[in-house]
Length: 368
Image (cartoon, rainbow, N blue to C red):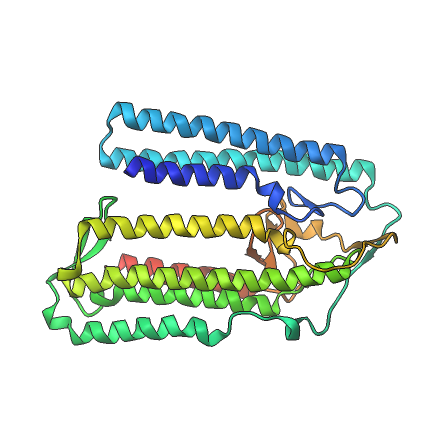
């Protein structure tokens, strides 16, 4: 079952990475802005196809090699988990390396062919954009937090009845394989980590309200509608993951208070079901929504034929992956390669948003 689980993860990563260019806006290729009129350039289309073909072929070969090794060598559980993680990192490393190769090629092609020559760069601003946004209300995200706080209070009420050793880690089979001595801190460590994660997803949803909209001046009405829908779907996804994590970690914690509800089978099945469900939802999100809502069918307008293009922000995207623009007040920005959001690393608050949750989670785990 461990082989099946990690094999599924490996296959999902491979397919998602391979077809990533299909999920992005036509005006972006490997982290490079592609003006209207060049989105169907034969060389750009070829680069996208080559990327998909290479990453998919490499991933499939690695996938079957991993399955063959796991089923014929009969490795120990520890070795199987270690190799599984290494194989996944290899897949990501190879796909990212090939991405950078394509990024350099497209960027060079853009410069040599003068895609921006004779074009007027225009920034379209909708002053009522925030008013039009229909994200999940903040209070909905706060409800799981209230549940977690209630779980912490309940834990203190049951402190004397809890075992002297508190499980802090569960192996692939669902059995606890690491424990900490019972203290007032160790008994609430898991809910505290859960609370940090819930705050992170709330901040992600709220951050979209203050992120500038990249509206295409060639097709303003369509672009605006897709932007609004994209942010709403992203907010829904954040809420879905928040609820899922709350239910999963909430059960993990409750079974330390009430061992009678614990079951190795349930402890093994729940994370597996949660993982598969999350992957399925993310896959649907990528295919149906796409980056910036580019896959959403909305009632829009016909593209104009004027020599106007969006502002070329390539200089702010390092490698097409890391956005650094100190003049942009946005903390969160839409990714150029990948579906979702990234941070404006030139904004000081971005580092706080990134590092504080990681430090808190790491610190809580270290103190156990």
